[in-house]
Amino acid sequence: MCVPMFNLRTEYEALRDEIDAAIQRVIDSGSFVLGEEVEAFEAEFARYCGARYAVGVGSGTAALHLGLMACGIGPGDEVITAPNSDNPTTMTLSHCGATIVWADIDRRTFNLDPARIEEKITGRTRAILPVHLFGHPADMDPIMEIARHRGLLVIEDAALAVGAEYKGRRVGTFGDVGCISLAPNKILGAYGDAGIIITNRKEIADRIKVLRNYGHSLEMEAGIDGTLGIRSWELVAEGFNERLDTLQAAILRAKLPALEDRIARRREVANQYNQRLASLDLVTPYEAPEVRHVYRAYTVLIENREQVRDHLAARGIASRLYYSPPLHLQPTYAHLGFQPGAFPVTEEVAAKMLSLPLFPEITAEQIMTVVSALEEWAAANPAS
Image (cartoon, rainbow, N blue to C red):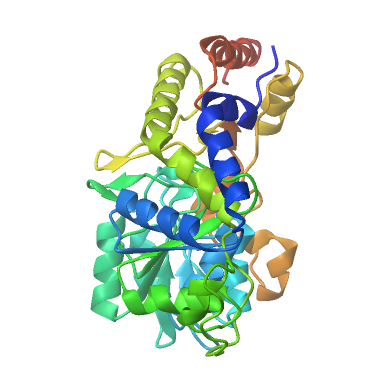
């Protein structure tokens, strides 16, 4: 039996009527850039997250880039983050002219270790950028305490963690901004690139709206769909074309009401894996007692990972390696001079990580296919 990492087709089939109606509504409206549909999604998403403001943008990468810019991150600023993330986390820092400062991670959560942050702070440190990896929230209380004590900004990378909670509060709402990817394979996904930024600071939200729309003043947005005419052509910044498409906003609005049920199903599948894999020689994902993990990925730690992956692939089972090697050992950042051993926990974890199929529509039979294949591997390769 083939078991994919995720299946966007089955998600569409579950919400076909709502999604088709949303697409048709946009086509009938004749409005395709920003406008009322985007504004409605922003309001609904902000309400879901418990944030005052949400601003839709063209991608998760754009969310990070514009979020950093709106916070004033620029040349000479140092930003502390984790080395086990995707390239957008750090390339957006470079695009702002900021300096990347990596700190090692917590072995259980795979997130930035608050105990390693203080030693990285200098007179040039401007912000901390925690990543809520795979849907498990970073340990935000000590991170926010460090930020308050040191006068630092906090920019949350919640690309993989829509709906995740830390002590009952949704991620993305702790820092100055929360930056979220809404790409098709994320917890809440559009049918193309999309992203959103949440914040409780009006001046930041307004700044992002300017930056996403070429640098035009906010009055420009009121007439961009052509129905009201352009109210202003005033340019107040050099911005970008990073607007959220109206069609994507409508699709996301159709999906948002089902998000909690889909997260509950992800957690149910993860629990089934946890129970069925408990006897095997691997480490299942940790969930801290104060968080709600949303399981964007179900990532185990296992020895002989490459051989295990080949074993799964031979049986039609997909798996994925994320962030291996970690960013500080990637060719892109060779000029920074990091050598193996610089971040030992990150490197140890990166060498053993293997993500297994998990999506809301995965069947019991598919789950057992994955489990049986891993049991077969374990029986043939007993731990020494």
